[in-house]
Image (cartoon, rainbow, N blue to C red; front, side, top):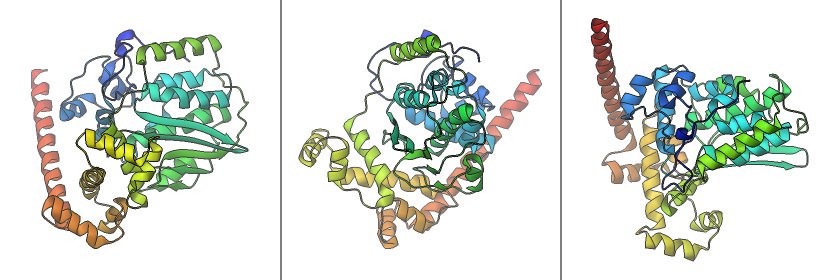
Length: 371
């Protein structure tokens, strides 16, 4: 395996960032990352309004949006899932390379959980063994990120790939969980993982019995491991700084499929009392119920743009026990019932896609003439 080389300019220097930064880019920048997963970078970056600045990190919401857009451009709904399954873990970032050079499988999973949040800031990861039962959990903490299916499936399938690197391609977990709603064509997920896959869960995880955590990693290298850990910590600087309202919105988002989120549970998750949370939100000019409302509205727009989800399913995802309550909310937010809002969103989406494709064809034709 080729050693991972991460130039200093690939990350901003060690400092405390003011916003989340996704540290998964290859030394070649955005184009290099997209090219490594067989996606033509130019139309993707152009549509996002992002310039390819070699080595510049991308904030987490933009990174997730980039993967969603790459899935659209590739025409592969299971894009992130299959990229994570097929790519070598070191291709997808320094944390994967650290895991590969760990001494044992258990150390590899522990190191991945420790260092992944330095690579993908404002995320949380943990590897827990309870008797013979093991769980690797991962989730995005940033409440600004409302659509993250491709990123979650890429990350979890990369972890699967890491374990199989040690135990062989036939290894399968007991269960797989994802935060996002069930997509169409879930047979692909079952084929990739060889296990039951559950959606709309509180976190993304692999659950499995102890597969032999003391098994040595094939690419273990203690000197390279130490150097990689030191480099990532030095260049990253921290696991990120997230504003209070974005933290609260992230906790709200993860709880909505289970019903209306209670402030007490979110305060506990943030390690503060209910009264402290209310006071600190007030200092930011925010009220908890308003954050629930704004998070629901943002997710409603995302889900209504997803044709395979029924209106009833969307209402459930947003924590409404009654469809009528969701209908009233849509009228309040958008001035129309959910079905009409969906028609409007899909019509606008089709127009934008058509305009973008015409623009790309025009540019391609001009380029061909110049050649």
